[in-house]
Image (cartoon, rainbow, N blue to C red):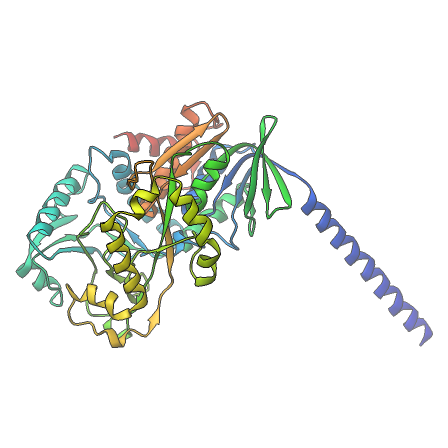
Length: 467
């Protein structure tokens, strides 16, 4: 028995020493400054797609992705309508690049879904007009769609009687039926892209919020969670709701500020799952503002929701009252000291904001907006909220909302600001464009622009975007 007791004691002591050494090693490695050649801030669909291409083009470089949440696509990238949109909303002269990215992005997502066996449901979208003004907008959209590469089989304009034969429950004056529109789960797409990127050597730093950025010699020193430090030769800012703040930290975009909007959804009861075959959007009444009329959404799994609205909040993570109260004062001071004050005191903006707040407080108010084109739905049957997502819009010094993506850089950093909905559709193609733009500018020369990136050759993607 004594021998057994001594052996047991020795095993316990050895185990304790091993555990102590493991704990010490973890603490030691966590305290070490990690060095990267390229560091991407933001693990959303854009940052992850950029890491995907960079990891294929730069096999010998160390690449890292910093994300403050526990996983990729945790915020806006995974909290949207899940649509892969045809480019009918983009002016082909003013937004040619974005239209091309959406057009080819659709094909790329379809091909990637096939390769990875991810759901890609070709279910279409119908955009409805409720008055003569809306009909004129649809006619403009149809013209743009054709200029952006869509064919007659991809999109068609229907009058009220034609759309009734296709979708009997819809009430409208006219509608665009966009056949080239699909439903996916962007969270799963982003997770798969990150898995591919990690297989190529990309390192991920999750649960790591950037709390300080400063130049140290020729490198950027990034402080994470107020304690851990990483160094990088080149910095890419794809941080979504925090991208403006990060740009400000490195001295760029000082004349810009952002305003955050929480988009909320209500889940429809199962009895409505067969109410329509397609998702339904309506022509936006105020296109110069980031306020959306709620849509009727059919998810990739067949469930239905209404949303999103666009409720002004005070944080890119303002999902709840506690976070918004905490950020209320600093955000208001920031807005009042910038061009955003002009938007805040604009009477039309104030009225639209009040309407969105009312739709947030009242389920019936939101459902009522959808009943204008889908009168059969009953507000009393909507009992469960869907996931809310937050979108950040950029305002310039004149108090105007900027509709386009903003790209800024200095000698060792590149910043993507205002990359908004429906940016997920074009994320793959647009990310390839960003990587190529950084390469062409001489900021960061990739090793092999002819590399195979999964199912695509990188140089082929770039050639298509130039068409």
